[in-house]
Amino acid sequence: MLPEDRSRIAEKIKARIDARKATNPGQGEARTFQVDLDLTRYDKGSAFARAMLIGLGQIHIDGKTHVDLLPAHDAVGESARQGVSPGAPDGSAATADPRGRVC
Image 1 (cartoon, rainbow, N blue to C red):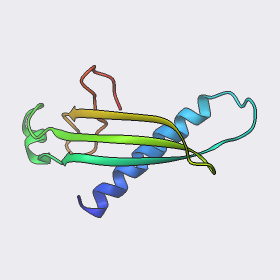
Image 2 (cartoon, helix red, strand yellow; image 1 turned 120 degrees about the vertical axis):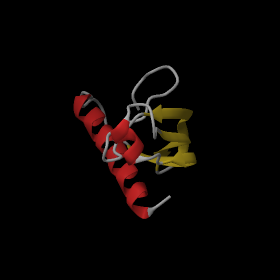
Image 3 (cartoon, rainbow, N blue to C red; image 1 turned 180 degrees about the vertical axis):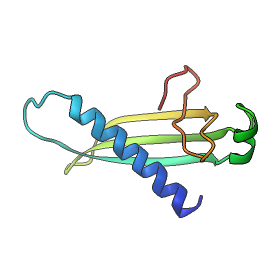
């Protein structure tokens, strides 16, 4: 995976987390988490094919996430996802898991 792709994915994940934090009511004490993402498959697909016909050149991202509560590193969540997205012509896209939810 290219550093630019890694950066883009990290920025999208951070934006999703920040958006989610903004909708959570501030109750109790603030907590800090560490999120580890292990991409098991990343296929950028073809931006040219996506521009020609929807469905061609799809982006594939499979991975596992692990969430720890800091500072004790207590595990609080874990999941595995497989996703495919037709993507935008510029190569940016969210992923959709097999149940159709946007990730």
